[in-house]
Image 1: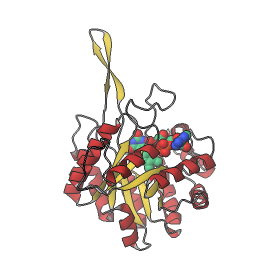
Image 2: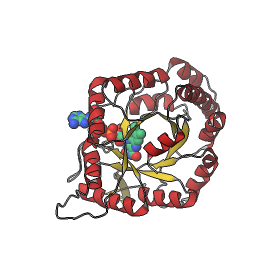
Image 3: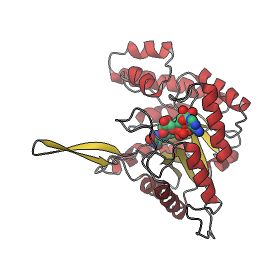
Length: 317
Ligand code: FAD
């Protein structure tokens, strides 16, 4: 079922959903199942599966290093199919501009259609580690808006090669990313919202936000999005802090603010076990307030181990 239909069907009740990362190449999928199993009792209408773009790996041979390009966490669509089959749940593959040609994206979407996947999350992706800024892949898209347009075109039977006569069109529900504290590259929140509106105008059906730790940023974002003419559902993405290092890492990588009370609470922890507990408690309070405000879903970034997400969900659902 489409995300927008799940939201309509819930009739104002806040639902629980989460995002997982595919295992590294060579690892067993069982570990992923072990982390998902405890979360299924909270009836997620869907599970998001992230996509990682290619990266450089260095292989030592006779004292010299060979540089190879590879994707370390492939298999997003395969995992979506496996989870759909195992748990009878909707799954949402993340589709990226970075690292993929338009042609490859078309193949991926065709696979999704055959597998009965009804939702896709359209994202630009980040720059590769050695790049200062995002550079579009040869034959790929520069911005997520273009990717949304490609997906929407395909739903209207317009494939890349105009000679294709489509008799069975796909009908994807398309999600895109939104940033309550603006995207790190955007010159201002207003500019970013203008670009977000373009994604919606191109055919996005719903928005999932970047993580935030201060709900007031999310509520302000909702207001501003509404004023910018964005009327699709906006789903808050949230993540519990799990290790002390997050105090530096999260502001550095995502350019987001951490509230002073949270920083102090984490800073005074003696070890990461205590940090994990602080993260859970903060996230429960955050989630309760969001739930009371009537958000359609609480979408958690699970990042591997799910014990903290289970503790949060148990307090709320
Ligand atoms: P865009 O919407 O293309 O925006 C990127 C930047 O360009 C913004 O600053 C925007 O303001 C600006 N911009 C947009 N259009 C234009 C234009 N026409 N002209 C000038 N500027 C423009 N990354 C992954 O690699 N894999 C994942 O699975 C993944 N999942 C994610 C899920 C969520 C919910 C979120 C919030 C992020 C996710 N990301 C993922 C990270 C995402 O790829 C990065 O944040 C990326 O830097 C931006 O992606 P976007 O789709 O928001 O890009």
